[in-house]
Image (cartoon, rainbow, N blue to C red; front, side, top):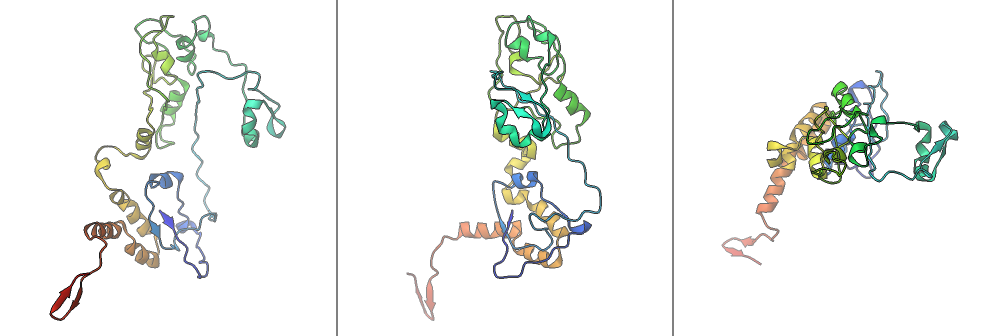
Length: 278
């Protein structure tokens, strides 16, 4: 939902006390990205860019762990870093990270003994986050990956404890080295014998993040935001509640439904005893 500031009016002042420091998260914005409904200016919501004066200690930002797997590897001649902090020098491939280099730790020299002497692809992929020895043949056996160790330890920190995304469906069958191709298709493993299913469809990944499953799929967009609108009304001032009443989901739905039923046409002109249509 977006706000429209009225023209030719003095800029309102905002109370940024502890009771009025509601903030919109990125998740709230993305949830409504498919529909936008213009709202009147609401004095109860801090203006964008104004940092409320918090009297309490800010809650810590959730810690996140992400892994990007590049199957074709990198060019070692351009993928390097020297030094640290503001003096860090980056190779050609990492130059785009220049603005963030003071927040980066570039680690090199890692070694995975169990990925040596086992051929290429599956034997070097299925244990990239576990370091476990992989079993050949029909039975899968490796080890839980570090991302899932973290997901099991910190499940309450984020909306989803773990998300595994991919670009293509897993490959079945066996490699010439007699390793299952399941090792080639998965770097995330929930235990020694089961990989974490990956999501390859962006729309389903979105549904997983925003609980857009089951009976919720049959609800209209306006029905979905009804609870959020009610929550906003409870935090709003008396003036804002009056404004929200005129732009509530129920009101918008009634108006849109009326417009759908009534085509855009000129009403008949009437005079006593005579009815004429254009």
